[in-house]
Length: 309
Image (tube, rainbow, N blue to C red; front, side, top):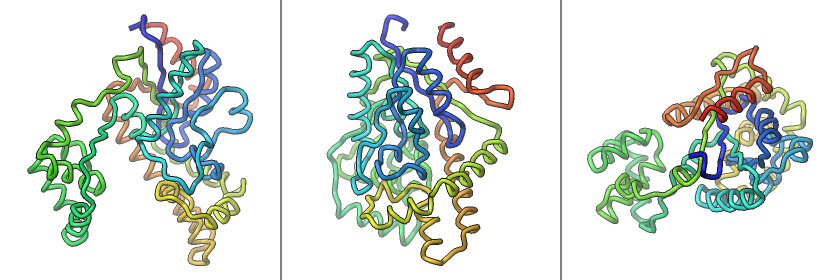
């Protein structure tokens, strides 16, 4: 596939060090970075979203960072449209798109496309929500398993939103969403795509997460969240880890130490979910980091792999 334009993905859990490796790699391959992160798009969030530093943003061109207000919704369809446009612009400059981030869903819609079916019924959704409230997510998941086994295999039993969407599509179209999604088209096959994943052993990753959370508080997370709480946050922006945890402290419901611990715990859980998603994708070439594998060494490993294929 060397005759095709190249696109490089660099993914992995939060706090693994993607930004530093990506900036170093971008300079080696004449690349420009496209953020594959659902929270770095928001202008008013710097600390909680762990945005690249000002120096990093100046050193390498970045795309999809600071592009919308926290009062706006930013979903996968909007991300995909903006990311594809950025990829084309970067290629037109004869540079390499380097897609970097921790959102497995965003990675997936770029690589494999997105189902943009118009089958929607708000009343049906509300009925399914009521069933989930009364009988639980597992009950709905079993309903999905009877109607669309392949979709049920891919959707976690606690992912109520996606379960309801799959059932909604089936009820309205009488076609399993898994069959419809087979017709999706993404970047895979159109370009010379390589996907690299960074990871640390679990305890070391969790230690990095804990240290990052402490650093966020030192850098002014309390003040940032206090400002955000004055705005009408969109549903997507409100999910940023730190807003709820710090908010409870600002309201006097928890102490500072408890807020920090809860934020660390929720971030570790998020990292675990990220890895679960990424581990399902066999296209990812993993680089298992350790003390001896510094960011420059990780870049060398990626470059060697790129040269070998």
